[in-house]
Each structure stands twice: as C-alpha cells, then as structure tokens.
Length: 356
Ligand SMILES: O=C(O)CCC(=O)C(=O)O
Ligand SMILES: [Fe+2]
Image (spheres, rainbow, N blue to C red):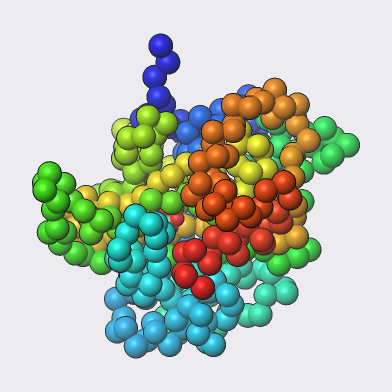
C-alpha cells in the first residue's frame, strides 16, 4: 500500500551542478509534493542579503501605521495594481473558510528590472535600501529561472519548442509585463483565544488562510524559530514544513520553493500547486518573504509540449479539479475549454483575494 508523501520527505536538492539527474529530482518533488527545498549555495542568494532583508522588513513593519498607510495597496501612491502595503485583515487568502481577513501585514514590491512597469514609489525606509531590494529580487529571479530551466529539461520539451528554455523565455520580463511580485510579510504577535466546542482553535488560530499560490513558482524565506507553515497532504491532513529540515548538515536554511497554479495548469496537473497555510504556533511575531514568479502576462497556459506530461496522462486530473473548485471556475462556468492567459488567471485570483 502506498502512503501519502509527508513534508519530512520534501527533498533538499543541490542544483549548483545542473544535470539531467538533478532536473529529475526537481520534477519528482514538484509532482509529488509541489514543494522542494533548494540548498543555498551561498552565492545565488547570499545569506547575508537574506539576513539584511529580514532586518529591513522588521524596521519597516515596526513603523507607525501612518507611515505605511500612505502606500496602501489600491491607493494612488501604491504604484500598481498589486503593489504596496496590505493592512491587518486587509487580505483573505481563504475567503470561504475565514470570517475575517488574515491577521498579517504585507508589502508588495514589483520587479525593479521591468522597464515597462512604472517605478514604484517606496516608503523612505525601503527606498534607502533600494540597492539591496533590487539585488535581492534579481537574485530570486535568477534562482527561479534556474529551476524553470531544470523543469524544461526533465519534461523533455523538444529543442524545436525551446527545450530547457521553454519556460524561461516565457518568463522574460523585458518582453512584456508580468505578475511577478516580491512580498514582505509580517505576522504581529497575537494571542489566539477562540476555541470551538471540541477545544480546537477556530479560524482565529490561522495567520494566513489555506490557499495555493497564483504564479508559476514561489520562493519562500522564513526564519529559524518561527514555525507555522503547513501543507495539506494528499490524505487531507495538515503537516508542518520545517524551516531547516536538516539543521545538523545545513548551516543555512535551504530555500523553500513551491509550485503555483500556473505551472499546474500548464502541465495538465502533473506539477502540484499544493494548498498551504500559516498557523499561530505559539503566536510570537513572525516574518517571512515570498518571491512570486509569474510568466509574461500574454503567455497562453495551453499544454506544454512534453511526452513526459502526456505519459502522466489523466493522473493530474484530480489536481486540476481541485484547482477549479478552489477558483470557483466550475460553478461560474468560466474558463472551460478556452485557454487562459497568465494575466487572466492572475486577475481572477486577485479579485477573489481582495474582493475587487
Ligand atoms: O508566511 C509564510 O510562511 C507563507 C506565506 C504564503 O504562503 C503566501 O504569502 O503565499
Ligand atoms: Fe502561499
């Protein structure tokens, strides 16, 4: 009897010497867990920059509310549709499962290297570290492209269709705008007191509601001693994902990567866009950072030309059905048959999240 994969099986993959074997390891993790750890090589995303980014995040979120509110998301000063500051309870990642929005704050920053994006005005605390911010986002992008290239290799996309560059060329922000966004997250210290009749915490014990990510890949940075992230396994149980799965051998926490909805659609459900959430787990203040990598807006999410995906066949259907349910696509009768563009998919998700 096969057992459901558990987060303790999420592999730590060293991609510093890319090879077909490494590519296969990435594909296997992406199609069983939808999550994988990438060993931090100390160069692509220097640990010192990760530390400096967390320090910057602390400084920013600890400022008085007015300083942040000036750049509130959807305000004129925010600088773009999904940019700027999200206040406590300003966002609901699981609108059906939660009465209130998530008890967290966020600040969304658009890519620095996209010439067609209007320059996003940043609050002084962040603007004074704009070099660090740009460098960090560029490094995140480099890592995402390396992973996308490995996926192209493992899926054996024919060279005539772009081979290992199939995904990377579709992510080039110089050609078109994209939904790529970098997000700093702050979960203030809060005491969860609500219990239901079974003694279980209700939705107030949730810091970020159950959701899957919207883009193609997400890089997630967390801090040791700040747990809370959980993934929903195929046996429908919530299991924590450690910050560092092998602290004795890895001095630096590896970088957590998860597959988003777009890559799942694109691969006919072979890659898993796994549902995850953040729980209180002690209720101390918590910081995290997420780099949401998206393809260019106009990219069509039709089938990727891959014999590997064809061979996977209908096994991805359940994954796709779950996604459609989460997105309300079946109920609305939307999106059936037609191939969505990356932007259409993102707009749909943002509408639900922010009630736009
Ligand atoms: O804070 C975390 O650990 C996860 C956040 C997350 O899943 C998200 O923002 O999409
Ligand atoms: Fe997420």
